[in-house]
Image 1: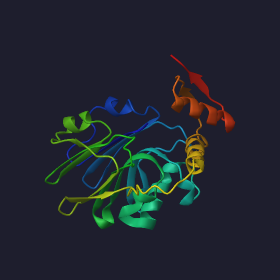
Image 2: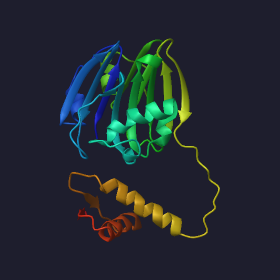
Image 3: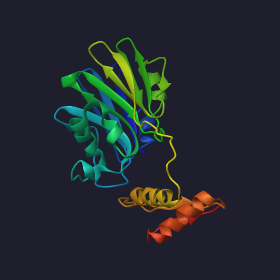
Image 4: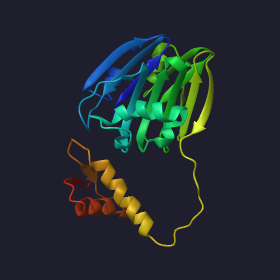
Length: 236
């Protein structure tokens, strides 16, 4: 996990609040009126401090983008995010397969974009009051910066904030189709195999699972063995 902080009220006051989420590197910069900080926990790819910057577009994110290879050849998966934005515009989170919380700022279009993945596996808090904006992985840094009415961004949400007047609008990341067309388990099994594969293929660190007596962890354990992935299991 990594730590995100962005505010136009105050720079990050207590670094320890963000370092809890990432001890590998802490950055603090200012872009226009925004104070930006990121704490890095590197697990896949090369160690790549954030914010990520390309074509004057700035991005902070926490998570992993599994389909980064669709957008180019990178030494770390997060660099795919800005290219996805350049290709698809403001709806780019729809094209990211992964677990993420992110903020992207494009000064040329006067837009801030904050987004969670479909199930909000990574937290992001935000505050928008008048022309005061802040977002962070934790609520406390925003409180210390003077932000109020702090909320957690809902799952499956991309929020566009236009910095000319700080008016916001929401879009979904995933549109669900609940019509059931499958008549066998083959599709589910294939999706399950792929879900395990993509979460382990680029991992630089050791892998472990919590192994209970339930079906979920047992199925994951068996699939890791079937795929020849080295891991350690812990039971309590």
